Image (cartoon, rainbow over all chains, first blue to last red; front, side, top):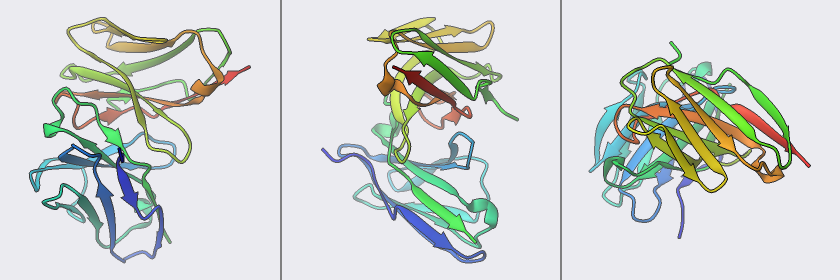
Length: 114
Length: 112
């Protein structure tokens, strides 16, 4: 039973560029959330997708956008990258918007912005 | 504004002893609290949770205690094992298990 898978594992981008990160949820899960974990900090909620729509959003600028596909997989897009966007990006999945269902996390994508 | 705080960046205990990890929160609207464990190069793994209507929840060696009046929760691991060495994150939510607010983590080292 495959868990949450994320790609790529590592990524290096230049300031001002755009990046797309990908996530496949755990089998049986239909809700995907994205978190940003800066060095020495806990994960911070970016947004959640359910039924191909953004359902909840954290305190992140519009440069951060996402998409969910009919097969429940998801993408996180970040435009106009800043040095401060360097972080571990975690994808988490759950079932039915997660009422009573803890999040299952992937291993993350390490983004470095130079 | 840090709504969930883990004031101890690290904790060292000996194998077989009790590990106690602490967490404080400020938002009285939080109604679910969770603990996640994270090994290097892996994503956080769910450990145990508690809802605000309870004050204790047990799962094997892991027990979480919630003191709502003090806005404080703790995770007890008894007995501690070397494999428990990891970073432990406390998280809280006011929307079930979704939109989690995490603390900064406590690194636990259990020595043989």
